[in-house]
Image (cartoon, rainbow, N blue to C red):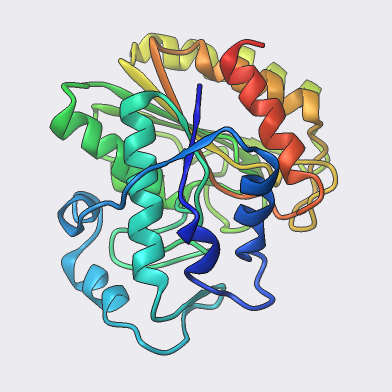
Length: 283
């Protein structure tokens, strides 16, 4: 599995002291030298998952604006979000790992949420179905927060199976044990869960459910904020744990792509992404 990104994601969408700082991409692109560039998504590709009025709202921004209580945007945010979604699309076609920001899995069809502008992994899934003859997609989200935006976009779609493993109760308050569906599987884990709890749940719950769905391709919302040293959560996953989550995710379908979501400790993020990359590659 190769890495895809774009250097403009370091320059665009400045956020000040916000946790989703451009430094997240800067430290990754500086430390992971073997990456290639990918182009932006088109507006029509974004609108596979998002309402035209909302897309226009983001496109027309000129001044710094809080789209919700956690999500800052400005005049370059639209370009950054197009670039992030485009890298995710290219990664889905080439079975790569998309290093992008802003993240995407909280973004709803008609509004931003939780640092997220457009839902990168959802847009990639819709692109695969529309253009690449991929019929059945599984999305596996192991960011520490519930992927509520991705769930909402695909909630009533029998062709996309969505799985989220996340700290609960926690932001955004969704994804509890009773939040389930025919093609929606939420695996809430208590604060303090580490490698053993995650891998046990993956083996006993996630793997059989995804196997029964029989996806043509799996897309991973790869967040690293469940790490023991991440400042925004309370989980205890280790570097080895992310390596194993990636290895097991890769084994779920004939084809696999990953898209960066959270992970906010700048000193640990490069080695966590490197560990996951080893897992995806089978190293």
